Length: 361
Image (tube, rainbow, N blue to C red):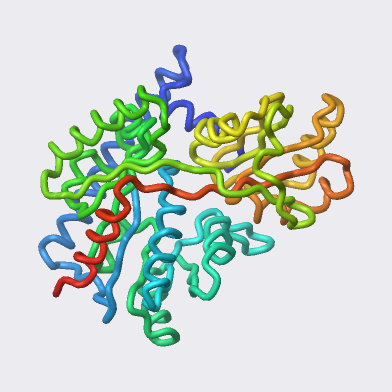
């Protein structure tokens, strides 16, 4: 599906698109959402009644997922959890689906991020999570399997369901896909053991909204442990050379933004927090595969506007590097921003993870 079509359908799902034609399309999508809900209900029934049985790995399984389409911060959460357990001497394996892999290169952005940030931690990519889990058990004998984006993956039994909910847009317009961005109703949070409200900004208004959201979540699932988290800029590094740049080099500097992630507004907020002046922005749909032509055009426009620095995300970097050499030697520097997730009450969060991961099945 082309970028233009994907963007149009997303504008319908988020109610950005207006007018008679959009209203007609929304009505169609609303009908399709009932079909989606029916399939969801049948799937849940089959697993709940034991008609279809999930695979039970010999090790502990922690799922990190969400109930909306993208942009909730589950990738940095997974990275942080993997690091903590690895530091404790646990053997960890990450299973990821590899969504929107480049057909030519086989590159999947989330998998590449995991591999680059989790040195020594095996990352298995594949749609068949049972096959990946069996491969992990055979090759690595892990203590813990981290199931990336696994909340809706009932085929693999898990010990902990952790769900990330974005503070800035927790449930979209409240409708299921394809009419909205909900993969499941908000009531599905009843299944979660731990819920993390992500992307909480330091501003008082954001903190207040997060507390209101946490109260709402606790009403849905009184037994869940609910935490909040925020992004913190960690480092900048050159996409071409790989060398690290000073984190304060963006202060009072005019830059262009380039990303294809679920929540570009959050990325923009983070770059602005470093003191940068946003002179141009190039936002694509989540997981977009960049072409050499697209990057060449963006670089040319930046040069024409006398912008010598483009800031992208760490998640976009693998796809950017696979787009070709359009930005190399152009005189326009591309810096990738790495962020880390900061969980409020880290001691309580990881203590809860430890408790749940050591309980008997």
